Image (cartoon, rainbow, N blue to C red; front, side, top):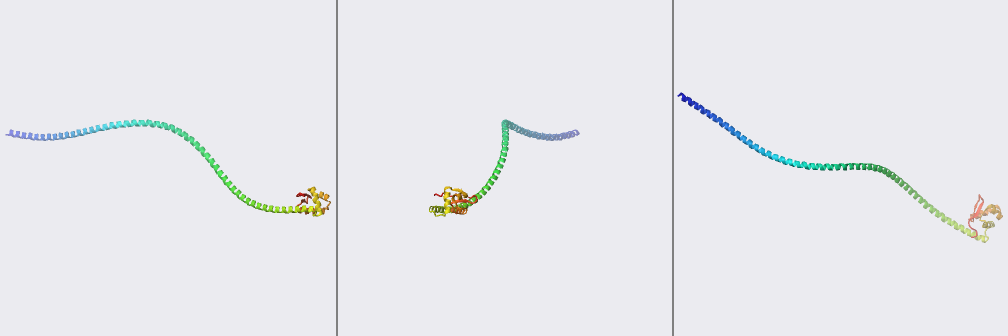
Length: 248
């Protein structure tokens, strides 16, 4: 009886142990299944990442190819730009040379402009002076013209008066010639005129010898004939001359 009880107890223990073992196995199986699921998910995730990485690698290859093409184009552009830079450098040197020439020319031109500006200023001052002189001369000319017009009027008046006097003297001379022809002048004057007809220029001493007149009567008659503009008498030198022919 006791053996059976012990066996039963042992079986119960084994059953309990089996249950516990089965429970542990189930737990472990569940853990393994869960792990397998996790690993499967990880594998799927890894595959996805691998695929993504492949795509990324493809994209990288494409980008690399594109970059290489771009680098090639850039190299070409670089070479072209270097050529352009070389040409530009040569051109720049020429431009710098021309710039220096132009700068020297500009400096020279500035000097010329400065000199020309000074000359212009001097010319302007000269022109201003000339204008002032011209204005002064214009004013003087106007004054001279006024004086000239006044002198002309005065001369015209003097001429008219002289013409009138000349006409009067001419009339007197003609009257004197008529008186001479008619023997109507005084005897001393007649003798003087007769002498002067032969000798238009003479002096008082010679005239006194020729006319045989007294000095006092001779001088009185000469002065009278001078008043009548028949002759000109200089009392200092005592010379006289006929003013107009006495035979006209």
